[in-house]
Image (cartoon, rainbow over all chains, first blue to last red; front, side, top):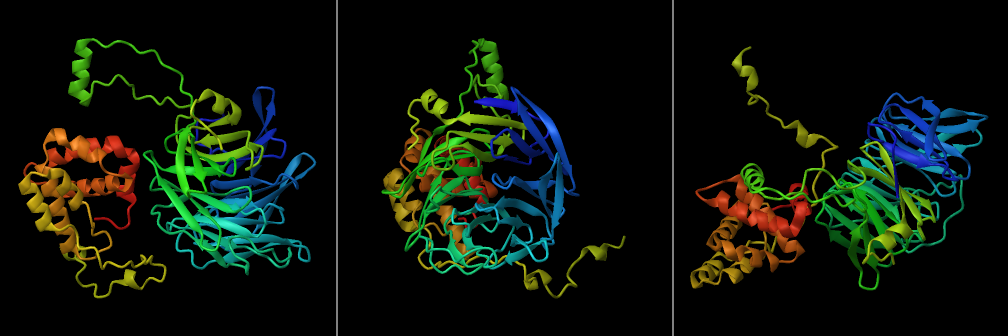
Length: 369
Length: 150
């Protein structure tokens, strides 16, 4: 895996372009910086300045090469590349609180923005007026929407919220698409319909992700749990409580395996067994370098016992690659079905690219199903 | 400034109740949760069978109950059992619990910290150390984020 430190400030959010040569990220301020890979270096090639508040979400549409950004200034901008310059188009979201997350739909004809106004704005382009228009999904959301993910059918949208629930909504816009075929989550999908609502977990839902087929959805919650639900007549929910600090982001890397990362600064693997409807911990995905163990004299041992009530020789230095919480995880190669590489960015201003094959061979007992 | 501006007794109406954006918790049934059976636990402690008393005390936690008296009673019963243990027996007792049991034990331990009495803090800290070794930081996070607690 390779670690690159972009900045000293946290990276609020990031997005990759289609061939993974450019990354757009927000250095915890009002701007978006686009870096291009040049051998082993990253060069800043564009700075997008339009937002008046911190940029909280960036998504880069691979096919149409458009970037959508949203921020705490309650706006979203769609950026198109004209020659060598990115030109913004304002999208009126009609929200009165900060926007928190944004995602292009798989067909890139619409995008969804989650906000603190307790609603989701689903925006699509109206050809007649040459303008982005938005529709709101309000009920039954009771608090800020923290994370979003689209189902591959371009209609269903999973949303994790601060009211402790993960829900799947229908974001069907009749102006831009045909009626969708029935899915395991339901067959009638009018706009705003709740297809699934989670029960059981307490804690804000920080990250949500559909599997590649769209039949499963996973979410990470602030009470240190990860849960997976499978669509069907009765949606089956399984959750796993973990011994670590809460996880902030989660993604499927195969149909049965999830990678999640959060405040513990290293990614972890979870494996879902649908026959037993059970989620299990797969392993820690970080290879710390072995630090030399120094011997401790008796005097040091006693001093440690006096000061810290323990004679442990472990120092208070993080051994993981990231030195601060990991806030976002994105798939680079292979899609959600057979991910080969994924990338994490965090509050230490660094970005790490993880290679699944290398991890599998480096950690014995790690099996990615 | 005049002292009487600090008093809010003149406020007759609690306007937060009428805020339409107020988050209303889901109401769950509280029927079966009367807390552990105090007499059964006492008998077991007197017989010296602290392990069974421990398991009985952790049954039927009054999580959904809105009655503070039930919660107080449950807390008192659990604290009695925790105090009755010998230091060396704490670790096997914690090991005999499942994931949910460890989370529940942590909830009672932190509840116990809120109202310290004679020797309770020292005993609770011993239990906390052993429960932490099994449950990790996650179990403490779950105590903090639980909406319905003991």
